[in-house]
Image 1 (cartoon, rainbow, N blue to C red):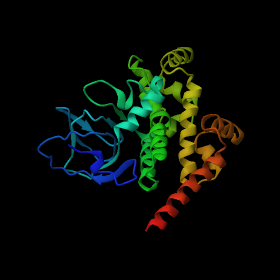
Image 2 (image 1 turned 90 degrees about the vertical axis):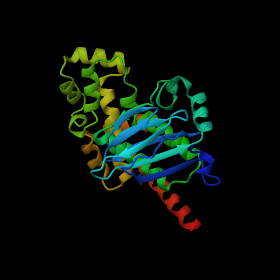
Image 3 (image 1 turned 135 degrees about the horizontal axis):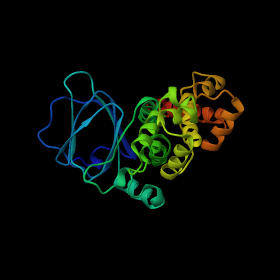
Image 4 (image 1 turned 135 degrees about the vertical axis):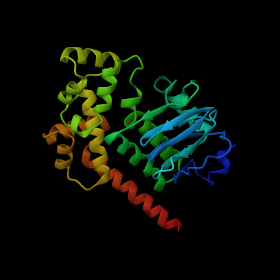
Length: 286
């Protein structure tokens, strides 16, 4: 069994790994006493988990629980790279206690035979991978872990994971398509086009299964994309707004403040400051 206390260093709240997955399969799948978030960065493979064989591909995010026995074997062709973030069961229990209404029976806290797997594509896959990669260089504190998990579950993945299983397939396909820049840059018009249904019908069904309007749903994805570009730091605000399909900079500011509680400039400065603090901390410990 893989034990978290054998993996973590003193003072650490989580363990980060980014590794190339071997194609040879160990004799037995292993259990563990902790939780792990897995994301397949590149390549594909077969996941032996709880006695079942499941195909995994790039962008798959798996929420592994302590009760799961699993091992991943890569396909022989190409490079399969896996990012894994492991943390103690106490962290999961505390998050569920604090946010029971939002998290119960979702993500790590399902009661089904196999763990939840969210399949990502396009810009959303890029956002998820970039968010995970920030954990490689950040301080391994409980605060950073909590922030990461909540960010992944509420901002990065929530748009896909929260879709009601009873939702019609055309809505599921439209939500998945809305993650692509060529769709979300068109706003609600892009969402309506990929939905392939009448305006009133799409609005009514979207409200029923997503609890929001097509415009607000797409704007949320646009602003998430904008936040990713702000963290990258290479584009100016006007270019970022245009990359999100928003020509009016003041409208971009208003949407961003509503979603993140601060201006785009403040968000960028906070991210850059956190990066500097992390690099300084690493330098001081060397």
